[in-house]
Image (cartoon, rainbow, N blue to C red; front, side, top):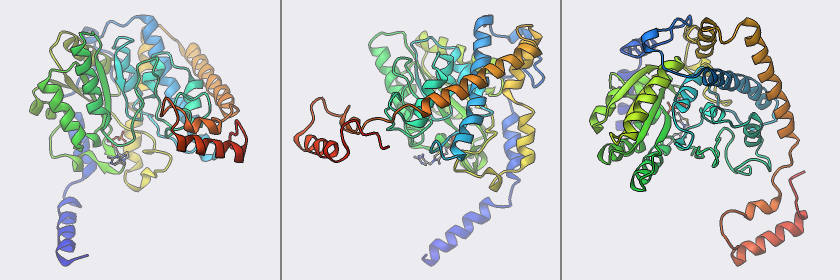
Length: 392
Ligand SMILES: Cc1ncc(C[n+]2csc(CCOP(=O)(O)OP(=O)(O)O)c2C)c(N)n1
């Protein structure tokens, strides 16, 4: 490395290491000025409680609890080499479930990779999620996507792209198109704190502000972009304040409080539907597990920090809230979790025994008619492996 570069690296290290206690700073930032309706014991502020039907509240709880169990079981499958990769959402379930539940069924969702909850609250089956993880022939993407890149055309949930933040301008484009076509649909896009450092975040926010796009930006600030803490990601006091620069309002909410997420999304959706344009929501939350099955979080965060966040668990809070409202009791809660676990285990088995996509499928869905060279390749593949070959 040239001398000047070495000096620059050293200077950068001096600036960033040891000057502040990063965890302390992160906590300080996280606690300032956020909406909370449901506290960590399930107490709630009656005057702020959103009007959600009992039926929807129970579905929301089921979806959140399913995400958690699904992750526990899928991580096990990954460790046994039965699926290739997993990206968890444990601790963040209230964000995707609470916000999607506040939308209309035909509004568009542009997710990142931690939002299976958005699909589940729209009625997706656990079996379909497993088809995606196993990449089998029943997978909507026919095994061509990375695991955890869940989508559904029927449910208006667009396939996530792996490069961080690329879904943001997609959501804005969709929202502008809906506006031009005089449709009432709006778009909701999810992304993390790290995504706010990407160009796509800034160009998406700028476009949305200028064209008053009916879009909701939901930033799940879980404190880290893999190992990089939010305080090293930005010099801004909050991520919500970035909305000011693009002429749109923002809200900061407790992302582990499903009622707060729901009510902030409802307000943003009403604004969007009235033609008042976009909103940025910063949901303060925490990823309890590793970034993905390829990560070891003990390398960059303390166990005590994780323990502190476990106390703020969104599912325990929702469960306590439902018990206070007498919608569930200890026994029905236990039974529900047992049902969820049984459904997940049997769905995993089914997906695992579903045939993989046949070799011919590699050549489908790109061209309406195959070009001559692809036809030759297809013929050669079928000759070599036999028709319908699935790799076994
Ligand atoms: C453009 C781009 N750069 C880097 C990566 C590698 N990468 C994958 S996830 C990730 C962290 C993203 O952090 P954040 O946006 O905070 O979301 P989180 O994973 O915390 O939900 C990075 C850097 C990528 N996928 N795309």
